[in-house]
Image (tube, rainbow, N blue to C red; front, side, top):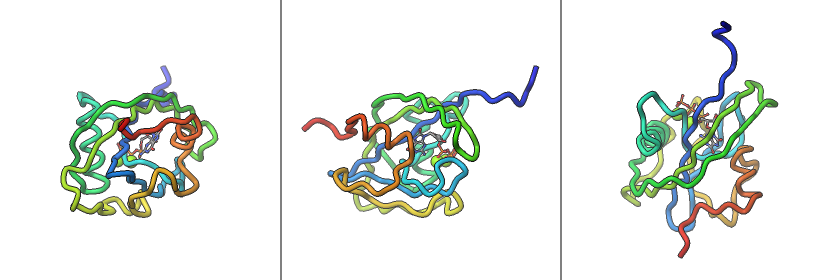
Length: 144
Ligand code: 8DG
Ligand code: MG
Ligand code: MG
């Protein structure tokens, strides 16, 4: 068997919401370099989606989150990236535990920095999988 054959992976990305805004950071990565994306990462062995969401947000931004809920899943085949990947991405929604707590750029080698953006005025370019969701009319905010 070929132990280096590519396989699909599981990702978890988090729509971290604060009022009408959400948290985005510009990626510094072989995948989606310089595009704006949600905090998130790969599901680790034995983890729930909620645990993965809380861990990745903490690792990448220092923020503690609550009200973690499953939203949707997408199948992302990104063969044109510098490093081609196939990732099944689970999208979660969450709120900051403390609205006063500010995001920190904990992994500056992976991200340009985090900021809150208005849903009606998103930065460009968005990371491909996120851009596709926006184009399809997906809205991560709870119905009011
Ligand atoms: P790790 O080593 O910390 O586990 O992983 P990471 O370096 O933080 O992984 P990542 O690339 O940030 O996220 C994993 C994959 O999730 C990513 O390669 C593709 C998929 N993904 C999407 N949309 C988004 C998104 O908006 N943000 C993030 N972070 N990942 C996303 O399909
Ligand atoms: Mg990560
Ligand atoms: Mg990440």
